[in-house]
Image (cartoon, rainbow, N blue to C red; front, side, top):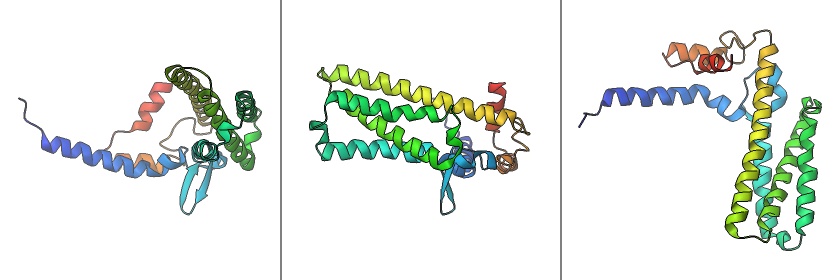
Length: 200
């Protein structure tokens, strides 16, 4: 049996901890700390949080819980649930129309998308099907929904950085400069260069 390389393993763990330390701000904000992305985040104390993730997801989860415990799921008709979900999810159109450049509109939109996801969830689980069928519907529909939203926002992120004066040169970009310098100072792999090379 090959002996464990404890020193190498310890170094990898230390590097991983250091990497998490430098990436901690972006793990919450999901956006670089530059003016271009200011309307994508909100601030609580010293921390920045992604509007999409920290408004949309909590809204959906809380909505699911509230509807369950308030017994509304037994009152609302399946068609009403589907209609409500479609109306709220349709607020996504505000993004391609560039109306979400206004932060308050973006916050309201993410709240509505969260609500739409809540009603969509309960529409699926109130269908008169076998549990496994509804489970498949849930997995397919929500995976498709998340793929569309993630793909759209990833492209928007790329397009914004591409047309910026720094054009994906994150070593001099104010939003990533501190990250890059910290990585180089601690001899950590520059993950931002890898991302840049993969999207060229």
